[in-house]
Image (cartoon, rainbow, N blue to C red; front, side):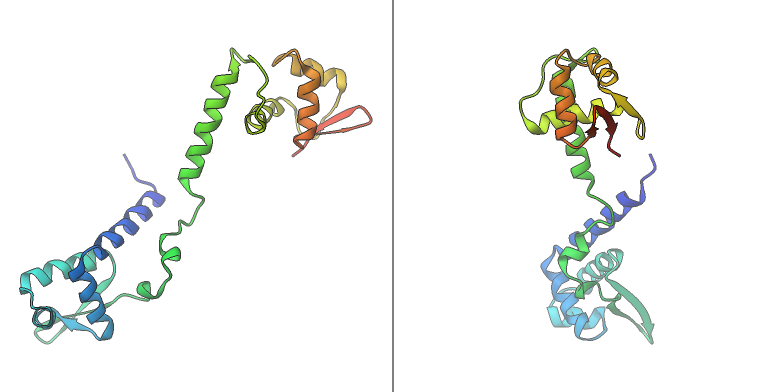
Amino acid sequence: MRKTTAEYNLEERAQLFKALGHPARLLILNLIQQKPRHGEELAAILNLKPATISHHLAKLAEAGLLISTKDQYYQMFSLVGDILKKPLGEVIRLPQPSLTNEVETDAYKQKVLKTFIKRGRLTRLPTQLKKMQVILELIVQEFEPEREYTEKEVNFILLDFHEDVATLRRSLVEHNLMTRSHGIYRRQL
C-alpha cells in the first residue's frame, strides 16, 4: 500500500520527536547548537562511549536535525537549518485540515444517518439541533442549486423522506439551507 504525502509528513514529524526523546540526544543537540562538533569530542564531554555517541548522532541525522561534513580525520556534526528555532506549534501543525476532525465528523454523520434513516426514509425527526442539521444536509442534496421550487414541489420531494413536510420545509429555511421568498424556494449554495 502506497503512503500519501501527508502520511510521510506525519512519520517524519514523529521521527523528529522520537529523536528528541532521549536525554543524551538533547545534550548532544545543545552542544552542537553552540558549535559544530565531532563524535569523539562529544563522547569526552558527555563521558559516553564513542559507539553510543555514534548511535545517537545517527538517530538525530535520520530525523533531519544534523548534517555531517568531513574535516580532516573527523566527521563534524552541525544543525540543519533552523528547526530548533521554530515554535513547537509550527513543527506539529499539519499543512492541511486535520484528518482526525474529518474522520470524527464523518463518523458522527454516519451514526446519525444510520439512526434516523431506514430504507431512505426518516424514521422520526431528530430533536437535537446538531442531529437535525445532519439530516437536513442530506435532504437538501435532493434540490438542484439555482432552480426555483414552488411549495408544492418542495412538499413532493420532502414526502420521500417524511410525512411532516411543514417541519422539514421550515427547518431547511431556518438552517439557511434554502431560502423562501413569496412562496418560491431556492437551495442555498
